[in-house]
Length: 278
Length: 187
Image (cartoon, rainbow over all chains, first blue to last red; front, side, top):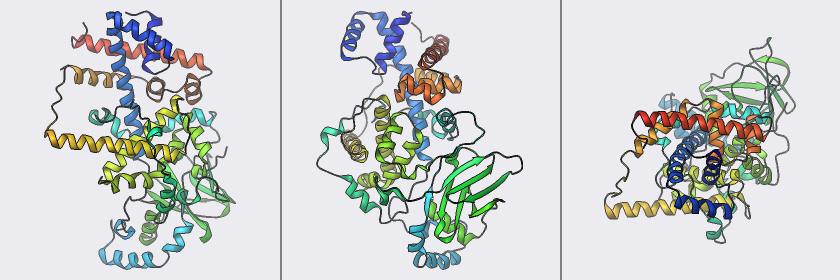
C-alpha cells in the first residue's frame, strides 16, 4: 500500500496536474519502484473507468439534444408519422409552399434555463442535478461505456498548429440558409433584441399553468429540469408554444394565470414538430 | 430568479462558462455548430452517423481541454473545434484504410483479464453515490479545478472538495479491490 502522499501524487500525475519538473521526477521514481508501478497501473485503470463513464454520460447528453436534420431532407418527409398519406401531401404542400418562409423567420426555438424560485440552491449547485435527468442510455451499456478505440479520452490533439487559413465562420453563414437555428444567423455579436425568458414557480394553487407578460413567461407547476422543455417563439403571431414531455401547449400573452392545454390539431402539431427540428 | 435564454450567449461568455464546466454552454455550442461540423465529415465521404460521432468526440475533447484549464484560445471556438473534427476524421479514415488493407485487426490482447477488470471497475463506479461519482468524474475526466468542483457541487470550499474527492476515491478503490480479490486478480 503506497503512502497517502504517493496516492495524491499518482492522482495529480494521472490528471496532468504536475508541472514539468514534478512530472519528470515522478516518472523517474516510477521506473525504479516496482511497487509504485503496481499502484500506478491500478489507479490508472480506475481513472480510465471513470473517464469512460463520464464520456458516455456527455455523449448521451449530446445525443439527447434535438438538432436539425443534417442533409437538406425535405421537412415534408419528417411529417409523415401518424398522418394519412393524402393528408400529408395536402398539408405538406400547403405548408411547404405557403407559410414556411414567414414562419422560418418567426420560429425561434429557445431553450431556457429557468430556476425554481423556492429553490435555496444557486444555479451552480442545482446544475449537477440536471445532469442526472439525462437518460443514462449509453452509460448503462457496457459496450458504449468503453471509449471508442480510435479516440481515447485523453487524445492530445494539437489542432491549432494544423489549421490552415480557413475560417469556418464563412461556412457558418452558408449553413444558415436552410436552418431555423437562430444562432447561425445572428453570429456572436448581435444578440436578438428581446428573448423570451422563462421562470418556473411552484404554487399550490396551480398545477400546470402559465402567465405571459412582456418578455417573461412564468410556468406554474412541478416542471422537470429546464432542458426538458423548449419554447417555440411565434410572437409575431401573438403566441408561443411550450414543448414539454412530448406535447405542445399554446400560450398567448396574458397577465392572468391560465391553464396549459395541449395542442391537438394534427396540422399544427406537424408544423411545430418541424420547427423544433424533430 | 430569471435567467436569460442561452440562445444568444456570445463567444466570450460561452467559453468562460465551458471552462467552468457548464453543460448548458456545451449544449448551446453543440447546437450552434452542428450543421457546420457534420457537413465537413459528410462532404468527405462520411455518413450522417459518423459525422455526428466525430463532432461529439471533437466537442468532448474541446470540453475537456477547456475544463482542465490548459486551453488558451487563439482563434474562434468554431475554428478550433473544426480543426479537431478534421484531425479526428482524418484518423478515422486512416484507420478504415488500414483495416481494409489488413482485412482484420490483428491486435491481440496481452492481458486476458483486462476486459474483466474493466467491467468490474465500471460496476463499482455505479455503486458509488451520485455526488461521489460526480466529484470523481469531474476530477479525472473534466479535470476541473477543486474550486470549480466545489462551485459546481455546492461545496463550501476547496478543502471540502478535496476531502470529498479523497474519500470517494478511497471508497472506489476499496470496492474495486474487494471485487478483484474475489476474482483472484490481486497479486
